[in-house]
Image (cartoon, rainbow, N blue to C red; front, side, top):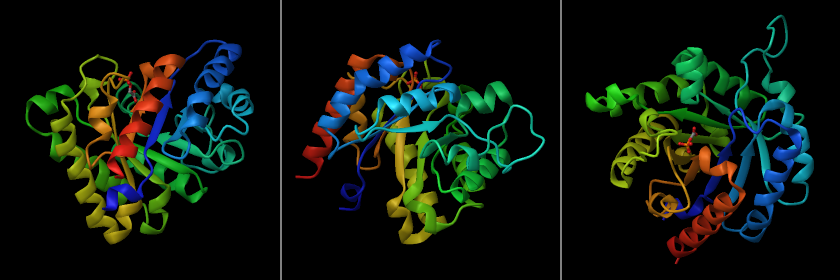
Length: 263
Ligand code: PGA
């Protein structure tokens, strides 16, 4: 079955936390034991704020846990005050998130800009998590499929199937992020299937290599319900990824679910 070929990914988005480097290092160390123990079943990547990339990477040496940035710009270098380019990141981390809903809503990023970022990050050799998801009003209006398809198609226009194994799509309904109102697994499943169909349309059989995640109020108690879905290859986790014990339990839960899926 195709889904079993894809190793589940648990990605921890720390957002603008923690405040001190020492706390970032402690958090990274706190999850590294569980990550190492289950490394053959689950891939774990942590996304600290830019200034903590290096200390966190240092703390994770030889653990198999990867690090990534939460955003990047699309230009390579130049007069873009405050921005960080994918080419710069490539020297320090292997991953980047683009199009997170907080970037879209708080900073006004457009679908086109997210596509530019995704393409630039891919071009720099990074592995990229492209986030898509509908707002609450769009959800209520029954526009989920339309919104998610549009966001994804615009990004995919600039991407090529040859990078499919470095691409991850995270479906995160905006109304589920940080609210404790996780989307019902059946609902998430429906939209993740839409994502997979759009990927197949754009990439053909190469789309099999792309992982699709669910994100939005995922925690140790509910993660299994998502990763058991055939369309789901893991989760992008915010709040729960900042608690070492909870995130460690999530790693174990995803490992157990992936073990049972493979038999
Ligand atoms: P949450 O955040 O897990 O706190 O809902 C998810 C995200 O922002 O990616």
